[in-house]
Amino acid sequence: MIIVTTDHVPGKEVVELKGFVKGSTVQSKHIGKDILAGLRTIVGGEITEYSEMMNEARQKAIARMVEDAQQKGANAIIAVRLQTSAIMQNVSEIIAYGTAVIVE
Image (tube, rainbow, N blue to C red; front, side, top):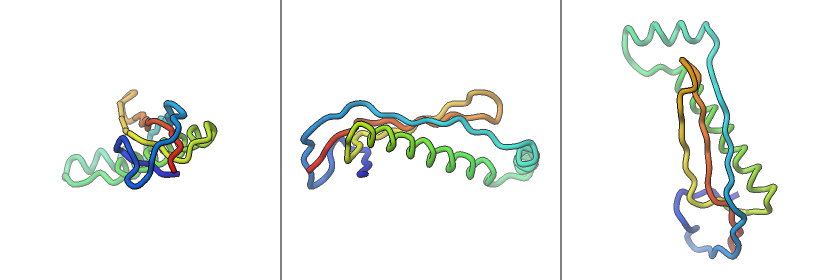
């Protein structure tokens, strides 16, 4: 599956639009990692527990978007965007979305 943030795939022609596709996930860390993250805010630096959580969430959201595109018969997704929002304290949603197409 070709995934791009642009409206076209360089060197390819969009021959068919398959439509909007998306994938999302809601992630949180367990209390032990939340405590470690809280301590890191005191001393400063990267909060790796949350960086890892968000990376995992992005990967899941993109995989679900790809699955949606595959079900529609697409071989590429153009105009891909990622968005995040806080659902509650220490819980985030990531959504990946774009336009499923067939390119040649």
